[in-house]
Length: 111
Image (cartoon, rainbow, N blue to C red; front, side):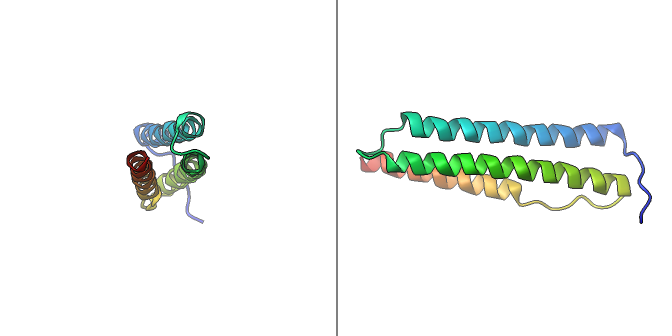
């Protein structure tokens, strides 16, 4: 087992700030998803708004879990003197937001 040492506090705090930024993004996804279901009027039966809302809330859940795993993995890597692990969380978030935005735009124009 590799002995662990406490990393420089600046790196620990930077890791924590990144974690909190992901949590803010999760909260924005939750709020956007719930707002979409409540306020978007994209058709008579409102299924496009429901789909957008569900996708955004699920994205928020995945982001919350992924942020915690990333924070934990980074902290472990820093304490063991290893490389920081690669994450696909930003790619997933960016792609989801682009797709949801395009779907919302298309349904708005189609209406």
